[in-house]
Image (cartoon, rainbow, N blue to C red):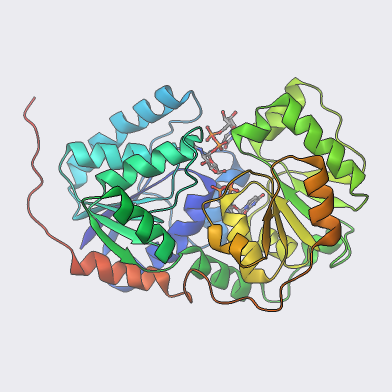
Amino acid sequence: MKTVTIVGARPQFIKLAPMTRALRAAGDTDIVVHTGQHYDTNMSDVFFSELEIPPPEYHLDVGSGTHGVQTGEMLRKIEAVLMKERPSWVIVYGDTNSTLAGALAASKLSMKIAHVEAGLRSFDRRMPEEINRVLTDHLADLLLCPSDTAATNLRNEGVMGTVEIVGDIMTDALRFAKEKLALDHSIVRRLSMRPGEYLLATVHRPENADSLRRLTELFEVFAELRLPIVFPVHPRTAHMIAVHKLIVPDNIMRIEPVGYLDMVALMEYAKMILTDSGGMQKEAYWLGIPCVTLRENTEWVETVASGWNILVGTDREAILKAVSEFVKPDSRPELYGDSHVAERCVLALERYRCDQEPFTHQV
Ligand code: UD1
Ligand code: UDP
């Protein structure tokens, strides 16, 4: 079986790692297309080298831009690759502009689309990710879901494709990282942090990072927490801090984005995680670290229901209360599968595979 996988942003490289291993182990040919949405070394290359992902067969160098420019340029360039490669499946991950461009390009060529991490919903259409998810799910032929909730969301929307619950592929990525990491948590020492005595924070959602008011409020409340905070700064947020010459409080240690292994090490030894990241809410849960989510809603509702994740937005009182009063629940039931998710995805791809010649328009 020949697949074309479209990736472009940090979390997608992490999801790609186990999938590409499983595809290659099954003897399949996986052609990887990197759109170039993320391009700094520590937003892209570091994940390929650390997670042992072979270099992408195609690099489209699309780079940054407005949603229309970026997605449009990807659409144009992905189409050319798909017409040349003619895969059995086009695989897309998550909810970025690279995801939507890949799905749209494939659908116009009548190629089969598999969406990994299908069915997630925040029900907040102001988020660009929500638009990308909904559209991709309605274009996809095979919808690979991390949870029952995701599958229910898809049924409620009446999607046309086949819905399969396989679990969350990030459990595979985390397991690989933990095995590779072994006992190397040296980043914690290098940053002069003591295990269990620092907070780890990330902020990159446009509603937080692009709002001077919300970002300033977050820094103010972070200062009030009076604990050391390790803060790997996403380039979107770094840009905002630089343009507005924002003062970052002394207890916040700003660092460049880190590779996945260092990130897992930082998460494992943190007292608590404060984040607006989607992926980190789950990683916090799997690692048994309390998570305070700097958003009003989440797609990963099970982490909140379990008591390990609290939604606070940027509300000062809510953040202070969540951090000072967090009580770890007694149990942490298995969520989003038990790893080996990539293998289940590959089996589903094989099962629903259909190698008919894709219909192509004459122009
Ligand atoms: C994107 C995804 C988001 C995902 C996030 C993961 C969309 C709409 N958003 O958001 O869902 O959670 O990736 O991190 O697809 N930049 C750099 N260097 C880079 C990459 C970006 O400097 O390597 C800067 C550019 O100024 C760019 C800005 O960051 O304009 C935002 O990048 P972009 O990829 O558009 O969106 P993200 O916020 O990264
Ligand atoms: N991550 C990382 N280095 C960092 C910040 C995040 O490796 O400096 C990892 C994080 O552990 C998670 C993924 O990147 O696996 C999440 O990416 P991000 O928060 O950018 O996107 P989202 O999950 O919100 O789409």
